[in-house]
Image (cartoon, rainbow, N blue to C red):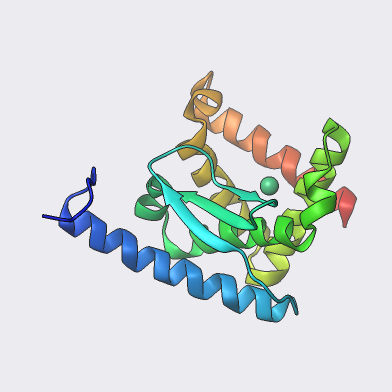
Amino acid sequence: MPSHPSPFSPDVERQLLDRLLTVKSWISEFAKVMGKRNPPELKTWISGHMYYAPIRNVIKIPSTHLLTLPDNQLRVAVAHEMGHFSRRWPSFFSWTLVRRLNEEKIADRCSIMLTGATIEDWASSLIAVALIEDPGYLFEQDLVFQARKYVLQRWVNLKKAG
Ligand SMILES: [Zn+2]
């Protein structure tokens, strides 16, 4: 028995720890490439959204993401959060929709630069994360239609920013 209450079996716990170590190594690798000191800490909890918390300089990744996303998709998503880290305070103070979307575009570009992902790789990571975090949005009508609309919009924004 673990000394703390855990909702996971020992096998899943081990899998989670393993994944956390992998993500940690990506974070320090990305920080080095970006020439940044003090890379964000990594924290996990059960489920919800993945995000960067600027005040504590923490990337929060739910266990659902760690347990279900393949390496390539998770790596692109982590690199996106590193994009927010690179603009820690401008990103934090982006409270209007226009500024928020701009920060998302910048983070997406950063993610593509850090991982060398193609637009297709990036889009597949985006859809995979969206399916975990907000299935209601995508399944609202026709899944494929919604997903493509979502990705196309992000892609168009990315091109505009580029
Ligand atoms: Zn973001």
